[in-house]
Image (cartoon, rainbow, N blue to C red):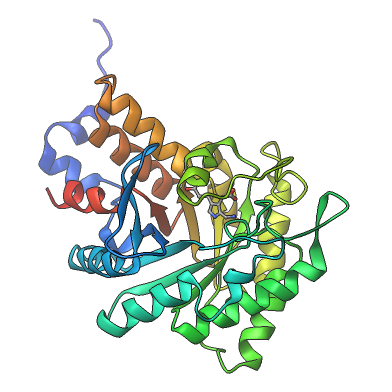
Length: 325
Ligand code: PBG
């Protein structure tokens, strides 16, 4: 007699009801943060060519757009600012009347119950496009820290609910934590871009935020894509320095790093499904080469399955519709 299997894994896949019962990973609206871009001006909504469906909004339009995000039940947005002027030290980044500060005040003045997170970095505000002060062709660490602290305090003063430093300077979490605490902002959490790689997947974002480096690249401060032990050391340092949430970025090519961080530390882990990851799916979807919705949901599920508790994604609004539909 021929052999027939006793154990049949297919039994648990027979229909959607049983698949629902045994499903291990469930993506939820509670997991999502929606990144948004804000520019000076009035009544502006510029669609970003390489990120279809994403816009640079003026403050008035941003407030309306954030209200839509809130209505979908998404718990948070992260804001990126495009300044009016750029200079060598990114002055608008820590100006209390800068674009982010205006945007945060406008949102907090009209909308409640949504986390307004601000990205803290200098690359959008410097004329050279790097994430800090330049000396002899490279970003100097400690002088940059002072500016990041000023920027964080200014964001907190305008009403930001959470600060998210993305610059990758050494010691910035400790410096920012200390600066915030001294100004009475000890209850404002820090989401640290802890393991942020020098990735080619940020291309479309740099169009959106107008932050492409004018010379060289970011490899002397962002991590080498080949390294994962180093990610653990970076995360460990940020936790010691006071991070409340740690982040791995990008997400899709770093699922192993997300998984490693999640198993190593007992702290919320965020993953940033970055602009290039979004653009690839959008472009292939528009060409009819893949089913955009299914692929995006599969990717987001994989990021959660790898261990992310929080996902920053340009798909957040669509994802809510897919999850609920
Ligand atoms: C700023 C910053 C970047 C991103 C988030 N914060 C770009 C960069 O480091 O060049 C990228 C986000 C994305 O690609 O979606 N430092």
